[in-house]
Image (cartoon, rainbow, N blue to C red; front, side, top):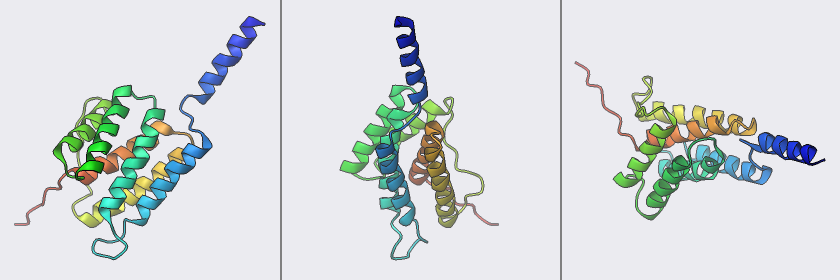
Amino acid sequence: MRRALTLAVAVTVVLLAGHIEGADKAQIDAKITKAVSYLGKPGESDSDGEMAFKLTMEALSLVAPETDFPSEFAENIDKAKGIFDSTSIVNPEGIAHLHKGYRLINSGKDFEMPSHISTIEDAVDHAKVQLAAARKDLEADKVDECTRKLLEIAVMVVTPMEATLEK
């Protein structure tokens, strides 16, 4: 009897690993959906990149503790969010925590802007695609992949793009 109970508990733990409760999942999904709604074309009245960033950070801070990543990852995300909330989304200390979190889950590699992004419009389009993919990952209980996509968008927003000079 004792072995059966131990086995049942072990199976339950394995099944719940990487799984987010329905209410939490709905809250995270709502934040991502709302973030996308603020990603209009730059200059349009419904466009608010800072709000989209803050909502992405809120979703990221909710999902980060549910990942299989080291606890230091979620700690860096929370620190960054706290700094951004109390100061500015361009605060160097907050940005440093985001980049540290990125390196923690990407084998120590630094973030590099995707090669197809050369304009703000490209970045906005990429963010929309990645946020939609993050929602699909969340729905499929692919928590780590959802988190990676949210983090990529957050880091991309605070990473300066280098202008290419035409000769």
